[in-house]
Image (tube, rainbow, N blue to C red):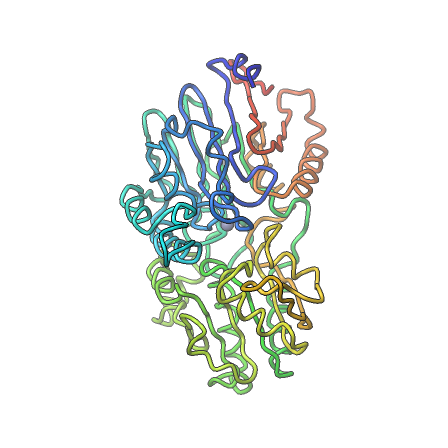
Amino acid sequence: SSDQTQSLSKTSFKFFGLGGSNEVGRSCHILQYKGKTVMLDAGIHPAHQGLASLPFYDEFDLSTVDVLLISHFHLDHAASLPYVMQRTNFRGRVFMTHPTKAIYRWLLSDFVKVTSIGSSGSTDKDENLYSDEDLAKSFDRIETIDFHSTTDVNGIKFTAFHAGHVLGAAMFQLEIAGLKTLFTGDYSREIDRHLNSAEVPPSSSDILIVESTFGTATHEPRVNREKKLTQLIHSTVLRGGRVLLPVFALGRAQEIMLILDEFWSKHSEELGNGQVPIFYASNLARKCMGVFQTYVNMMNDDIRKKFRDSQSNPFIFKNISYLKNLDDFQDFGPSVMLASPGMLQNGISRDLLEKWCPDNKNLVLITGYSVEGTMAKYIMLEPDTIPSVNNPEVNIPRRCQIEEISFAAHVDFRENLEFMEKIGARNVILVHGESNPMGRLKSALLSNFASLKGTEDEVHVFNPRNCVVVELEFSGIKVAK
Ligand SMILES: [Zn+2]
């Protein structure tokens, strides 16, 4: 609004969410300070299609962006990047880590295929967000950065730190004219089977932009979740059922595979040698495993030690076979299927859901975070029927068991709070959470920091909606408005 514009002074810091504010999906945030403009992430919303899945790019002049940083390869953080680079007036520089760029390439070419409208004719071509050609052109212009090394673009300094979550995921600490901002992207602090968990940057930050996916919820300890996961799958296949694990092609799927491959090896008499096969079904299976096998050196000590000790790559699984599609899949007897996409919107996982959900012996096990408006979120309500994706008029009975065990690798409340206390920023901007969990997190944070209220160290917490400006004044003594 004009009020906000008039009150802008040289010392004011502006945050503006084009997407991913009070929602999970289409993450994109704009920061402005002292004439510099930084854009954080460029995702799509997985519950929407075409232009409706984009952040609100029309609400901001993208030609003013100096630097665009991509935190990780997940679609809700990276999938609108080719659109931004090829189909808008954006002309800034784009940075991501090496593994993110390697995976981005395969992931988005699959995304183009899956979301392509009218690929057989040219009539609906304009509905497509971008083409393979756009993707290839954007790829050449993306610059890569190493963890822990600082880049300076015309006075905008930024450094990538490990964020956990998925391979290549980074937190960015930005510094413009002495003002420091930390953007977490999606992050996890729990010890993982293969990833380094998120680290605390050595220098403090004035502003923290932090995810709020799980709000004030608490995760069960990891050992318990692993045990539950393997027991649930074990008992299902013993009674002759099929297990469907909808997973995003890459990232957390590899963590689940490490767990299952180990469990199958320990129970090889019962499950091994193809008695109960495990499949990883994705267009991207082979290409993506290649990337994982290449970047073992960027993972945690634990997995690198296994790699050294056994002299064999931990991502070459003994008990898991790859399927490119379902054409060659012989569906006889119990099996375990990790299939993408993770939210059952369409594709292989949706086809198997529709095939297997009428049988009460079968199990659908959700391990990721399910965004509002997707089938994965809907199925957890245990509906009597689900609509067929190819013909919404047809309802399919749903009798299979539905369970959720989270391996989404986002911080829970305790982990998030502990991290915030370590960062010590006096201004906290919450992003990447649905309104209710985000609102509860804000209240919990304010009461946690209540004793500092009115002092110089008071912590200000913001939960803005999309396209609402947060303005902070920094002059002399840093005081937030
Ligand atoms: Zn993510």
